[in-house]
Length: 210
Image (cartoon, rainbow, N blue to C red):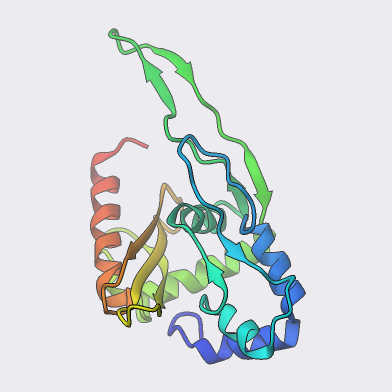
């Protein structure tokens, strides 16, 4: 269901666990919360405390319904899965250097949320790897780097869907996490967003000293 992006599976499960459990997990991943960052960022939203009917609960479970998320929040979510469930504070600048290439200021991150347990994070990592190997995210695959990810296709009022892909690499030693959205791209995330993620990950792995 995960690797093939089967919405009905998650819709069914959401009605079993209920909106409060679904909402608590959303809160764990910093939806409905102001994420501290150097730039102004809107809050991601899932108003699960309201009077939601079964249809809205089910559609929210696969990212439709009353769910709105920012690319920053999605990048942090996928980085948390790559980081044993720990979501860390995003940094716009990590180090400041002087003209002699010496560090004059260093900014350290901190854990914002224990989003899921390491065991659950590992299970999701495996499913994300399978998504790129055999599922809807195959266009994000690279020959020499194990990429893991998840596609998304978000319907909206324009009738041209937003294409999403979130992912990280390498699988065994994650160094980079990405969140790609092609607004009103009119194609699935696997078709339009995954190739962009592939190119960014490839460039980063080959050119950045992590």
